[in-house]
View 1 (cartoon, rainbow, N blue to C red):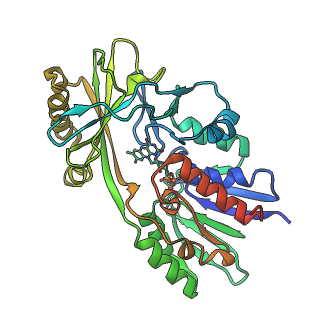
View 2 (cartoon, protein in one colour; view 1 turned 90 degrees about the vertical axis):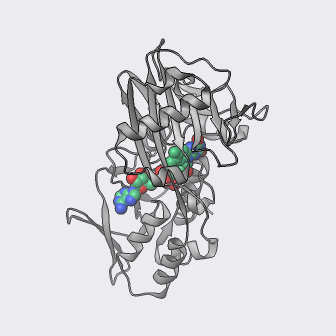
Length: 345
Ligand SMILES: Cc1cc2nc3c(=O)[nH]c(=O)nc-3n(C[C@H](O)[C@H](O)[C@H](O)COP(=O)(O)OP(=O)(O)OC[C@H]3O[C@@H](n4cnc5c(N)ncnc54)[C@H](O)[C@@H]3O)c2cc1C
């Protein structure tokens, strides 16, 4: 009998669930509030540039995953960002990072290609611009979803929730199911902490040559947590232009989260100009931004708590279940859940 599976969230964990089910007797439907799929592994196009404003790259750290997953999805446009990641400290002192850091994978058409290729081979149906607001479990055990327009979907045999933990906790709080497992799962999900990052993009009508792809502040004591050169990725930035991706530290990001882009970008450009000792960088010719209220998990959920409602058909997946904010880990976590649902484990 074909099992019907609803997945809230079409980020890499959500498409991972669908991917694991693609050869099984399962019909997967993904729901995402955004216009497209891929979640925090996000790409945007503007003024002839293409930029990854969430996850920068996929770094699985081993050849098996590259050969078994990335290569199978197709290597056209798949690119290793060859230049290294260096570090900066609280005083803005820049130092070479670790040697032999391993490949950092992205795509000429942007990091969203990963989720798009996974979904294409799995063929799951996707409802985008569909924000799920509440959930109900029927007396027959099926799960019904209701979106913010009042439209209902289901019932489904199984339900997988993949939004960041605080958003999954909101959904569990809006779930109509009179069962102790719901309270246990909700409490465990609600306890997972996320940090906030505001990403600010600074574009310049000139190239920025440096021996590094990115700078990271490992001690987390500089307002610029991460600074990368998008031009190091093929086809992202036209020749003769420069585009910097500044991911601001959590404290700075919370403090400036709602500040209008122009003044926030002025502040970021000044910090970046000082860090790179280049006054030209105070005046980008255009800027953009993205606030990631729930950017990266600072903790993870206990494995037993995460699975406490699975025998009732309610699952959670995502980077915060995997234990670290990484694209490949979130994807694998989704795949593992899909395998459990379809009895492949
Ligand atoms: C700034 C930043 C930089 C990063 N850098 C890297 C990096 O370089 N390398 C790396 O490996 N990882 C990086 N990460 C982490 C990586 O992006 C995540 O770990 C991974 O993408 C998480 O995938 P996910 O599917 O678990 O969650 P998400 O991508 O968050 O997917 C969840 C989806 O749920 C949807 N959703 C939420 N609520 C609802 C609702 N009520 N109804 C419907 N849909 C809903 C969201 O729209 C979203 O698409 C970075 C993240 C950020 C934010």
